[in-house]
Length: 191
Image (tube, rainbow, N blue to C red; front, side):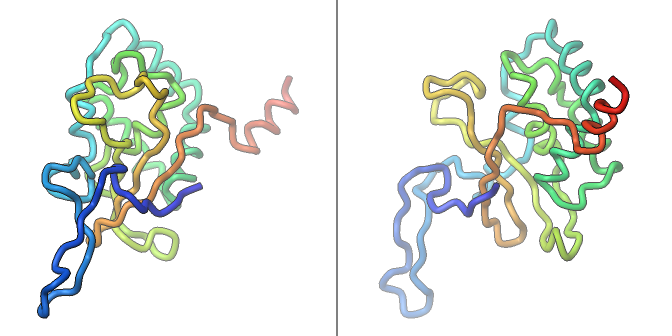
């Protein structure tokens, strides 16, 4: 499901400290790169605030979350092991405060992924969550104003940023929302 990112933000990187005796050589992004692993790009839901809104879609998005809350919660738990119901409700509260529901042209299958970006930080819970972390959607290409419908299609990845190392891991965005096995079985038992 998740892979380590080899080229953060899919931008060129450069070698730093290659001739330094005091510091080990390492790779770094070019100045101004939008990678969320570098300051100040790691504000988890800041990029959502600048996106266009359409208030006419908010009710349908909220209804989708109400109608599919268990499936959305379970999908979020797959993205972040040991996600508690209390943490999930905090994501909904933040989504309300930044008005995620009226994001223009956002397909409903993006909602679990967008909700995961609505936390400043998820505290470590060993063993499944060894580090504090937060999530960001795949960065915008420079100059882009629309996150969902870009020329090459929908965004494909959510990034988990582990702290304090700021290592990034890709989580593939899947365009389906399946009920958890116990809800699917309940639906079969009660047609």
